Every structure is written in C-alpha cells, then in structure tokens.
Image (cartoon, rainbow, N blue to C red; front, side):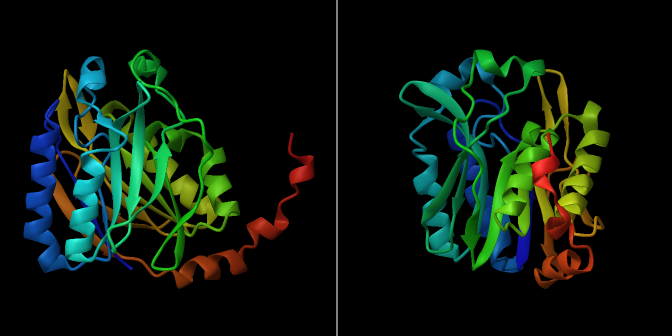
Length: 262
C-alpha cells in the first residue's frame, strides 16, 4: 500500500481556507504520486483555537465530511482524514474520520484523552467509545489522536483486534519532540505493527509544532521521518506481509498471560 502523508501548516480559525488548501494540495500532488491512502494531521480545519471552537466546529461532521467524501471518490483514494472540531448535540469533540476510496465514511473516532496541559477539558468533550479497527483495501487498521499516543492500552487494544497499521494524527509540540519519535517506535515494536503519523508544522500563540511525520515498520525501523519545521508531503510504501512475519518470528501475542496482568 502506498501512503501519502500531508505534513500541513494549519491556518488558525479558518476552516474554509484550510479545506481549500487541502483541495488544492490533492489536485496538485495526488495525480502525480498516485497513492492508495492519504493521511492528514489533527485539527486541520481550525488549529487549536480552543476558545473559538464552539463557533468554528463542524456540526455532525459537516461540511468537512462531505468535502472529504467527494475528494476520495473523485481521486479514488482512501483518506485517514486527520481530525476536526466536531459539534454533536451541543458538545464539541476532536473527531477523526476515515473515508474509503468509494467516498464512504467508514469510521469515526472521538479523541478519548484530552490534554490537561492545554486545559482541553474546558473546551472539548472526551470521546466515550473505545477504539475499534476498520478496514481499507482489506487491511485492518486503527487511528488515534496525538496525546492518545502516550497511552499504550489503545494501541494494544487495536493490535488485539487484528490491526496491522496504526495511524497517529497530531499537533504535537516541539518541546516534546523526543517523546513523539520514541513513543511511535515503541508502539510499533510492542505491537508488531506499522505506525504511520501525520503531524502539523508551524506555530500558534507561541507554540511550535514539530512535524517529523513518521512511518515505522513492525520491527521498529524508521522508514520515513519528515522535516521538523517544513510543510511538505511524503510518500512511502508499506509491505503488509511483514506484519505477519514479525508476529511469527517473535510471537508476543501468543506469549501473553493476561490473567496475571493486574
């Protein structure tokens, strides 16, 4: 499967401008790269304009969800559609969407872990449903959002459900770049899965974002590492057969003794 990762700088507080930015990028790049799957970063329609999100958020995923479905269908691509501010029954969630190449939204995940350092609880609601696997082109996959990466339970849950690829969409800050890189490698090794991330670049209200979008194979080898500060796109091919190979060579899941884990 060929991936195309958009390491994007987000225009704060302007969803329409950001949708146009993604549309223009797809028109320019996808025709050349011909990927199977595109990955966008976290909160790419608004950035972390937390005090304004109640006004800026999509409602039940719209209009962004329909926008993504049209692009996926027109260009015959799957989209791991990053995440957006999404208002449902008056509550704002940080919601990730997955759209298949037929233009169907097949999965939605609301970020479970809100960031206390940003006081996210004052502006967002945490997701209330467990992570689940979804399938694109017959491959079982999962998606988590930024701070979720610090909680190994999520990645392990997806691996136990059969996921071979974990997507991480993020606005991860530069001061903790070291954690960003090492945690992705750890999640890949301990779950013997691919970890594929899209992180934004740029700055907002004094906070820099570290880019460094990555692809890590099931053995922990970094196949791709993006720039720390440049908006760019990166293509990478992943060999899904290697997941089973690693899981057979080191049978971690058969060795588990969950009844002794307290």
